[in-house]
Length: 330
Ligand code: AVJ
Image 1 (cartoon, rainbow, N blue to C red):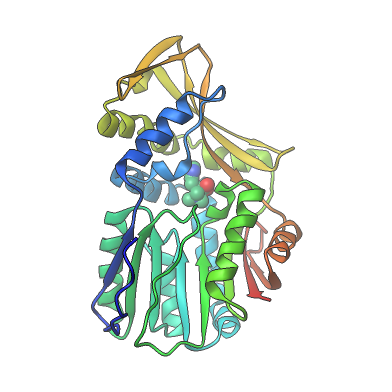
Image 2: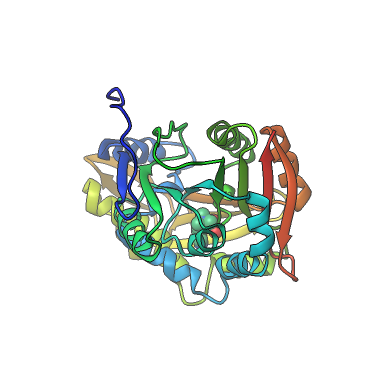
């Protein structure tokens, strides 16, 4: 990376973007390596091309997908307490910011002056950040297009007085990491916010298998489309020849491991070519595309402590479907 020039002061209403995006070759390398594994597997971050972002937004509207709606209600219902917990003059750093809908609630309540959304999806990041800056004229927005599953050094920002840093990681996206990866990620966040910084993190709670199975395998087939779009993206960007009708979406909650697993299953024995390489599937063989780990309140607090946070607050809904943890960097 180039040496940082002297940081220029920020201006409200002028959205600044930084791109630390992995090259297109990385997608190719990860897909080719993942399809060569005994258990074929592709990381979930590759779901989010333009079509994938749209399909994820459609998932969030499904009656079975309670996560988004419940988390939004928790935020709204506890916003005064949450704002008090974060305190005034906080820089708000959001991981996986997407369409930034929940963020508006926070920015409004916190009267945030510096917002740093981080997302892998460049177009969604730009469109959402510009839209947000238009809604809050006093707000400085610095969009970071990056893959935050790798350690990430945030640029130095000047011109806005800040008392502490607050990391916001909604959506239970932390569940896409294994617990070991989540620990590593939380340690990185701990370093980014510094001592006294805070973390607001949305975490889906363990629950009845039938509720979770329906949330990840909806009857309208939107989640199936979202999952199978990965094959279409490979066809589009890597010259693959997947016939998506010869594959099917498979998602289920494994109560022993406390996680949902999502796979793409080959319905037939078949061969596929991607970027000039051949891959064989036997009937019933799967590509593992996602895990969504579920944590009890105490399990996640334990993880936070191991990462150097002190768990101080938990906000939840009356049915205990979902929760938001408030933690302070020790
Ligand atoms: C955005 C990663 C939190 O795991 O619940 C939704 C993605 N996958 N339906 C999740 C997703 C299938 C979602 N996260």
